[in-house]
Length: 354
Ligand code: AMP
Image 1 (cartoon, protein in one colour):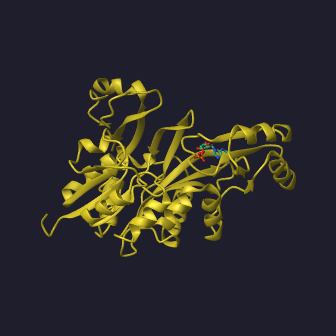
Image 2: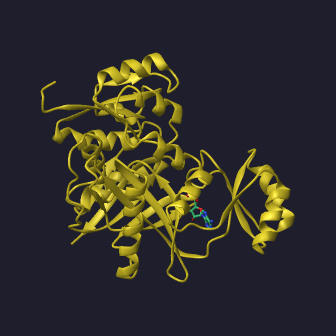
């Protein structure tokens, strides 16, 4: 390894790791993967892959000895794993950021402590708790979510009346749930923000996100919303990045309420599906920003040179690739996954226009 090059250790081997590794290569960054699955899509783009469990301390120590800095590409890595690795090598984003992002009550509590807006929420340990929260708020509907490991709408249920509270609580099969006020939103947007080790912060233009069956379907930029609102969304994300001492990239999902207010719903301390459009419509992609930031390089240019619509290719949608390629403005990304299971993120396509 030459003095110019750095080895970035990546926990996880999914498409986000794959696109990060590809973005790091021109910068002289070599990615070493660590994940339990030899068939992970990122392993097709780097020959360095340690296949071991996230709890395997011996393997983690060996991995840490091989790399200069460590990051991760999905947020369900056990926080203890990251805390342990932090004793051996720098890990970005920190275990503090990861712990906040992994638990919805901690996440919303942290947002409110930073004066960042979220929907009203409370913890509940039984159906009776849910009813007392609803009574104290004076509402007859609420959303219950598991506090951990929820993604793509999994682990959530709408409670339509107090009479549904018990069955809603039981459905989630959890000891504790988060109760949220149902947000009357006009649309959902997200901001991808990055911060480097020198404290510089930047963010991309917010994307308008449309979900199908709770899974992201399209991200459109520019989002057709007032300029001031878009600016405010970027400011919220940038404030958050500074307050939590972020190093790396963070996706911030927000609701735009019917009265054009903003509420933060969820954060993810990694490149985000709703930021894939940056690969083809910006000077420097979210993946490059992430690799730059964790490797101690300055951030690149966040500016957008094109309008973009990113569409996820789920399951057998991937079979449309030959047809999509006929459009010269369509940028196709196939994640190289062998099996096209229904709902599985197989790739995405971004159509750009100037
Ligand atoms: P989440 O798992 O929190 O990302 O939620 C998945 C989707 O459920 C969001 O993208 C929203 O469309 C919807 N949703 C989540 N929380 C709320 C809420 N408090 N009020 C209304 N809709 C919500």
